[in-house]
Each structure stands twice: as structure tokens, then as C-alpha cells.
Amino acid sequence: MPAGVADAAHGNMVSSLIVQGHDWNNNLQLPPLYCRVGTVQAVPRANAGYLLDPDSLVPYLDIVMGGHPETKVWNLSLNQRTDCDLDSVSALGHDLAVLARKHNVLLVISTGNQPSGRIQPPADCEAALTVGGRLHRPDGTPGAKCPVSLSGPGPASMLKPETVHYSHVRTIGGSVSAGSSFSTALTSPLAAHTMAALREPSPDLVKALILHNADNPKYDVALGFGSPGVSMPWNSPPGGVTLQWTASLKTGAAYYWELPIPAALLTGGKLNGYGKLTAVLDPHPLVSEIAGPNYFSARLATALQVERGGKNHNLLGSLDTKKITEEEAREIDHKWSPIRHHHKRFYGVSFDGDNLLVYARIYTRDLYLYGYDNPDETPEMSVNFVLTIGTGQENDAVFNQMHSSLGAFVENSTIESEIEVNA
Image 1 (cartoon, rainbow, N blue to C red):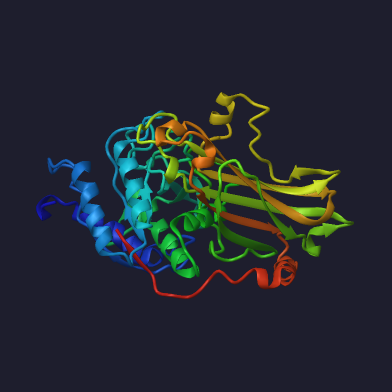
Image 2: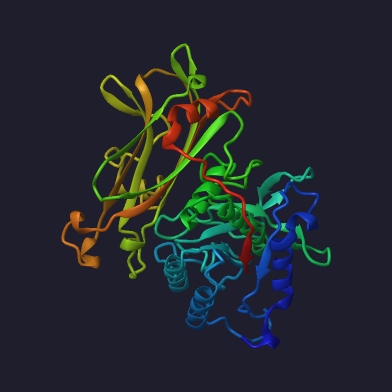
């Protein structure tokens, strides 16, 4: 793009938040997540008479990402001026998802701003972390939904946006600006620090951890899964323990992981506490280029369970498609979303045995689109799991008890390193 038509002012404001958003907004509840940033000149000024051409943008980003393999988080504060179709994924959203999977990077993308009705492409990118806006209270903590930033839902059962951040902020020069570009710019450093803190990071794992750490127990079309929590996504919360793992799952097979029940979670021999289970499926092997309502041909069912009376009982809830219609499963439970998220408190739950069970199974459809005759021919698909169990009481020993019980079967997932994020 010619330098004369680039939106340099917007780029500078976004960059200022990525580099030192906390310093520009010390009145807000923001951790000091400093970053380095590189800028790809791709967004024209609003009145420049120059259109953003997706057919040029995607190959351009392909080259730039290939030339900077060390950069794993990419901030895209740009949107096409049209609503996302509820039934069809946009061409730009699809092409960027293919690009993200190819280069193994996490795209952090804005929802877009008013005037409009719903999120704007490429906010419907499957592989991205899509970010909307949120107001802040006088004390600098998260407040109501933003009147400027656009809300979901996304097409093909996608839960978009997944997260929100402050959208009315001070940027370079000290002026207050509003929009989803700025909430996105505050989220990218969190993603970059999470990526850098993990021993074996992946874009989907970072996405899972950020959603798992957000402050909404249930999904909301305006606020997603909420804003970042007070603790960092890679840390266990006070009075709890967080486990994360990645598994390759074969279609149709039921998988179980057994975890010892910490004594601190028991009262009178019964379970008392809370659990949170987040799983992100990489559906890329079975994503249709025919971007209709059946965009995804693979879905994940997962649950946290205990044994009782010879049966497995769900502690947090799970999608049970046998008891509801397909329309309800799609609309209410977002059946074909690549994201599963269950969060619930439990009181006085009786159980047999000594273990919790994490269950997972992948289901498929429309295999003829990919040249497969039956599910046994489909490739294994990667799923990132994040599980937290605890009491919420800061002095409880849930973490130490779980760590001691699992011993050599687990390792610390975090390291310390430098961080870089491109915008």
C-alpha cells in the first residue's frame, strides 16, 4: 500500500497500546505487559479513496509471516465495512484461518465498530481470537458492554467475539479513543506474554488459556467469555489448580483422562468446589471451503465426570444431542463450535472411586466433501484442554495436593522469555 494513503494515525494509536498500554492507561486495571511491535502497512485512511483488497492482503501477509517465523501473535485491527453473514464465513475470514494454520500463528482480530449490525469480516476467522469492546467502571475495572464495538454472533455456530477488553482508552498523545481496534491492541500483548510463558505453546492453547481465564461463566454475544481475569492465564488461581494438555483424537473414539481428587475438595466425603473446563478443537482438516452453515465437519463433546452407581455423571454439564433437536443444539449449545466451555460450582456431590474423569469425543459429518467414505479414514485432530478445579479459598491446598498426587506424570508448563508481537 502506498505510504500516502496508509492510516498512520490509527496504526500509531494501536501500536502505542501494544507496546505500553498500561502506561497510557494507568487508571485502568491493566497488568504491565510491555511488548515490541512491528508494523505491516496494510490499512488505508477512511477517506483516502483506496480500498483494502483482500486478494492482495492475504498473499502479502503470507509472505510477511513466512519471513518472520519468530513472530507468533499478529494483531489485525482492521475490518471490512459489511456485516458477517450468519450462515456463511467470509472469504477473508476463511483465507486468514488457512494462513494462521499454515504459519502456526495466533491472529487477534477486532470485531469492528458502529454503525453496523454485527461483527465484520475478518472477525469470523475460525483460527483467530476475536476481540470486542467493553467499558470500564470509575475504579478501572471491567464494566458494561461497549456502545461502539460490534457484537456477535458469528456464522456456523462460532462463538464470536470470544473475549472483550477496554475499548475507551488513552493512546499516544493522551487523547481518549474508542473502538474495538483498541481492545484488540490490549489483548494482543496478553496473548504474546501467554505464548512466551509456555514451555510448549501453540496458538490454540494460548486461545484456550485466555478464554479459560476470562470472567464470564457463560457466553454472551456482546461480551464473549468476558475480560481477562486478575491472575495471568498461565497461572493457577488461588485455591485451585489448572492443568493443560494437548491430545490428538481419532473420530468416534471415547477418550478418558483420570485425575486424583484432592482432599481439599472434599467435605464429609463429598465434592464441594468448582470446576472449569475449556477445550479448543483444531477443525482445520475438516473445514469446508464451501462456507455455508455446515462450514465445520467436525465437532467436540467433552465433560468433567465422576463415577457413581456404575455410571459416569457430568459435574459441569455437557452437550447431549440425544435429548434436544438439531436446531436447539446449534442455536442454544453451539453444537458445531470448535470451542467447548463448561463452568459450574458443585455442592455435596457423592461419587465412587478416587478419581475425576475428563471425557472427550470427536464427531464428524459431510465426509464426502473431503474424499472420505467413513469416519475411520479421517485424520486425527488436535484438541487443547484446560481444566481448573478448586475451592476458591486462597489457603486451600488443592494445587499442592494435585501436584503431589500426579508426581512425575506432570511438569510445570511455564518458562520465562522475551516477547514480540506484530501489528
